[in-house]
Image (cartoon, rainbow, N blue to C red):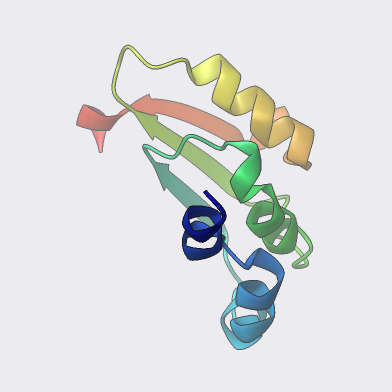
Length: 96
């Protein structure tokens, strides 16, 4: 069991730090498109890093899902991370 967790552990903080130049290059982003992303807690550190970028929280965040997915849950998760509801748009995957 320990070997499994050692092999599958995701060093989130290290990955974010290693990719600092990428994150720093996103300051001019005006729209973010999430394609089928679950927005689960495991990815919250990445979203928090994104939302620490000036202007990112005020960008337009598009949530594209398969039509039967729960958009309200995903929009709520984005709001909990700091994206204002007026900046969240949901749409079916087929509309892109």
